Image 1 (tube, rainbow, N blue to C red):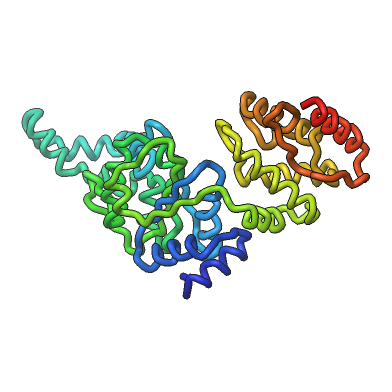
Image 2: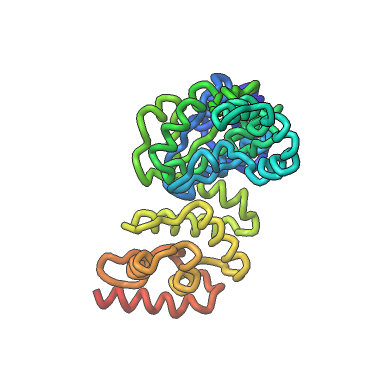
Length: 331
């Protein structure tokens, strides 16, 4: 699939996914060792995007299972198509009567019926869910188990057999083993601690918010309409906002949304008024918005975010500079 660690980096870069050598090394080893990868980190730092980019770079299909509380085998592995089974029972009613005709008594009829139950509990009546789809696929796909920390601990226990041997047990059929192991990516936003048993079965990768240099590279790559000076200003502002005590810091996706929004608005630079007007793009909670505005707009602990010197290109700058000057003299 990939010839080297550098090959991983280059082919992910072709999918506009920026990664360092550490991340590329974990991906390369996982593919060579047929090991699942558990990626942990805050929401919006590129965990899910890595699985998508990896599938595209390797020209493999992506099978995604979004985890949630109450997720069980019926939604993750398989379930029986009861409607189809019932239809076949009705169509074959006469034939079933012939089979049971010679029997004497209920017990004997039930035993006779059990001998034929594999007719109705066969692969013809099996509805494959994401994990079973990944196991039975002729070409190994990338299987994304997204936000595994949202699922119950019981579901984690169910996954252990699959993560160890790439096989699952179906009582009516037996053990189904992958002929070609899928590439398995598990992601977690760390809303709860995952079990040691699950972690032992995976290679571990920690992804945090990117450094200013990496985030600037991402903005240049995915929001090419943003000028270089504005991109630097934007990243500097986002990085400073993440330093505040927020319920949810802006993700990379929100950085890109903000960058594209500034392009649409034709903003030449970032100032206080612009931050206030577009704050809903990057901050999703009222209390977080209040903290950001307090940080930007005044108070002894406030800081100047974004542009540091006026350029004369924006008519709002005069008001902003006067506002800053007033506050500086006041305090």
